[in-house]
Amino acid sequence: MAMIFDRIAVLGVGLIGSSIAHAARESGVTRVVQLYDADPEVCQRARELGLGEVFDDPAKAVEKAELVVLCVPVGAMAAAVEAAKPGLKIGAIITDVGSVKQAVVESVGAKLPTYVYFVPGHPIAGTERSGPDAGFAALFHNRWHILTPLPGDEREAYAAAVDQVEEFWRAFGADVERMAPDRHDVVLAVTSHLPHLIAFNIVAMAEDLESVTESEVVKYSASGFRDFTRIAASDPTMWRDVFLNNKDAVLEVLGRFSEDLAALQRAIRWSDGDTLYALFDRARRMRREVIEAGQDTSAPNWGRDRD
Ligand code: NAP
Image (tube, rainbow, N blue to C red):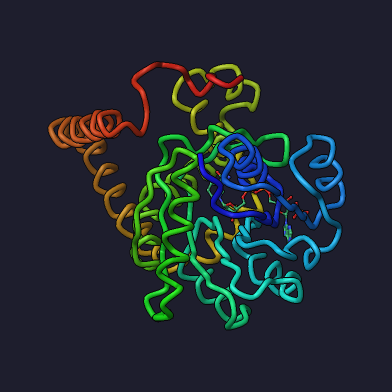
């Protein structure tokens, strides 16, 4: 693989940041990876893992980097940029991996100097783990990466910057699509944000239910509950920031979900088996479509394939 950038900087060395460091080395897209994390223990761990050149100062970490990848929680993006700003190279490309796009476009956009190019993005790839030990190079293989280029940036070099970021993610084995930020936020509210909210809610509710002891919940979790606990193990800071920054889309989808849930409740109360069957059958067909689209396999691995 040809080198795309001489130096890249990764701010935030958690699951996504460390995976980028691994993938960058494996793919050869860059010569040097410069890293910074707000947590000194994470910096120390990144050094031990040999993820790249680790800096204690964000402005130093981005010096000379042609690409800067923001890998911090959505609510910390603006602060990360603000702290790194004095070191940004003229003409550097800034991208991010935040799970919400419109809020990041606004908050980061407001902080960036005019001499850099901002290409927001989101890898549709992840696990419920976090921290620098969680990363692995193959995380982005055969996964979508959504770029939400800024429609208002009409500088000639901007289009070339977007193409370079696309090439960068393709080098990690990702499939890249471009989308408007608000569209991204609605799609992800349906496919990711609401499912996580439901999982957090079910797991917390089961723990609270007085009629079932916690030990029974754990003992019999082999049925559907266990899969919810895997999703609900995701990082609380990351998910708090997702919901605080994608309010409109999540509330819209949640309203629709609550209405449909009430209809299911009614069908159960009135023993309306036809309604229940029709909905479950439709949902099962959706699962087949996801597998056919290559977004999962039909193997009953129960999420254990990397344990
Ligand atoms: P993570 O494992 O929790 O790592 C985030 C790291 O960023 C932490 O070490 C955190 O340190 C550090 N950090 C926080 N504020 C910072 C700042 N201002 N400057 C530098 N470092 C800072 O998180 P992650 O799962 O990699 O997620 C990172 C981003 O990727 C989020 O925006 C998330 O929405 C997005 N994303 C995640 C997934 C996923 O499945 N996890 C998938 C796609 C996209 P502290 O712990 O001290 O705060």
